Image 1 (cartoon, helix red, strand yellow):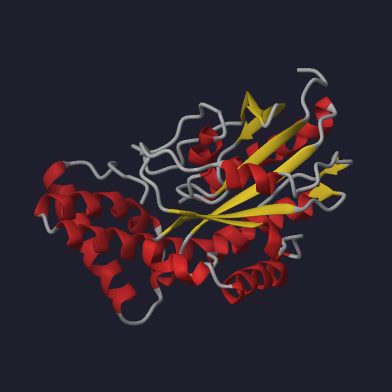
Image 2 (image 1 turned 90 degrees about the vertical axis):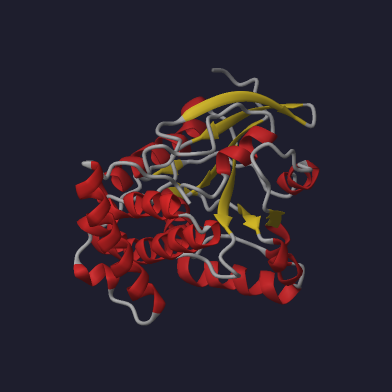
Length: 291
């Protein structure tokens, strides 16, 4: 690796947000898509040469931060640290994009934690390109309003201290993996982000308290999404697969992780009971998938 690169581009995001899908549409060839083991598809730091608007760019991919166990989350934190260190190690200026998935205008705690950790790890302060991905068709009209983008940006700034600006936010509608999105708006947006050389990269760490705060949200959201998807399909076999998918997560969580009112608590309880029944019948509860 030498100084031939115009800059390094690190596009990161938690598992399932579509970060590798976006990087691949910029010319990379990272593994992405369906997860067979219930964890993120990306496991280690990966780098590829891509050409963007006539510039040779070092594309960097790394695991998302938050996953279903604290040990895996901490391992991912180490990999993200390595990704951030590529710039100073090889004296390449760096640009950073963070991908978050659409949750009806809300930013998940795990996404805020990722942005905060990256912001705190780097010196000097880096601008962050925020990519809101997988936006549902019904929500596009809301993201087209200045008020929505301003609310998202202010939420991130208030909770992370990161340098995120309304004119550095890109909204991408939900695409299938075999669809080819128009990537030119992303390329244009990248030009607004200053490429900087990191003078110092601190190790990213995750405390047990930080993990637990994200885990509660992750568990309830996963269960709600899983059961909702199963109901849409309307097949007993699909419900069984969903129960197996979420069962291990439910089984290893303490009851405190499911403190919720109304539908979320009901979904958690029903899914776990169904999982236990199917595990006894099948002898295994290790099948899982990312939702």
